[in-house]
Image (cartoon, rainbow, N blue to C red; front, side, top):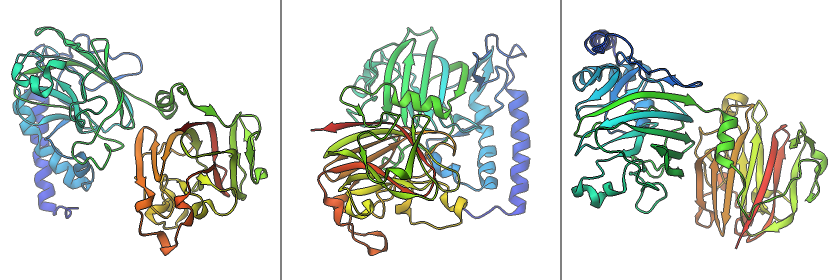
Length: 453
């Protein structure tokens, strides 16, 4: 973290901001002097580009968005404002179109986005190369798909893939080649939920729910929120009709889950606890969901046992902490955090602020309790439903929360435990699936399990 700016430096940044802002608002006017025709967003969308000037944008290079998103406000504002002169040099507005000369910083939205649907038109020239960064991470690729020198990089496959994904990874190459000839406008529809991305180019799907890898740090997913960026890469490119729609929790859950594919079986009928065991009086069925009763604890579990499996479920946390857990390979008695393979923690990401208590990182939501910490910051707001998918194979457990993998661990390799307390059940090869309640009225619904051979 950088030191806070001294007052004199803040004064310089404010002066630079004023000058650069005036340049952007006066020097980059559309030649028509009015908003571009046809820049009206569809219902539910807002315009990222007003068709007249570059208000609402700044400039960033190829850099990890987590670094500038973590800056103190004064330092970020200075970085933001210092970029505007470069933007004014390389970007302009003509006839309601954004035009880049192929050089300079990437045009970057002032606003950061979580889950969204993005509509974009672009038109480029031979030998040009560009892309759209999602939450500041590269990228939905734009190629000259006729440039033979880049065929070895995949240009011949066309635009619309997640080019920075690893070789062979889903989404890296577009499913179809859908580029239009030079001189014609191309149209993107891009949906991002968690780290998962769907792309359509000119009405043809090029990416189907693939995970966008974080090219800056492949050990981390894209940040939960970040800007939209338009890349500059050596050739003129024009943009128009940039519209965005933010996606709420319910829609995100539906997009991620869809219809359970073959092999998944519901283990909760939404009416009663048929097929379940344990202290069932701890819970009640409310609106087709299991609702924990306040100030009651214990582990309820499926009568069936599982070895390797995938479980899909939705959960809603209670205000004030929301403490529960997923019992993984539970033997049917004892504390599942220690006698089962693990307790996969269910907890409010803002638990410390809600309760005033400090927790070990290995107690955060999605963690293999006491053994391996999960990433934080990917939950929906309290009161909204979350979608989670947990995959258990041998000693490994992977947790995908709202479209982002927050834990991917091999528990057989854990050598350090919270409070130096061993977990004798972590090597269990099979057991029940269940919920380990801790007094909070959390809710669970739409629980399906697919056994894996």
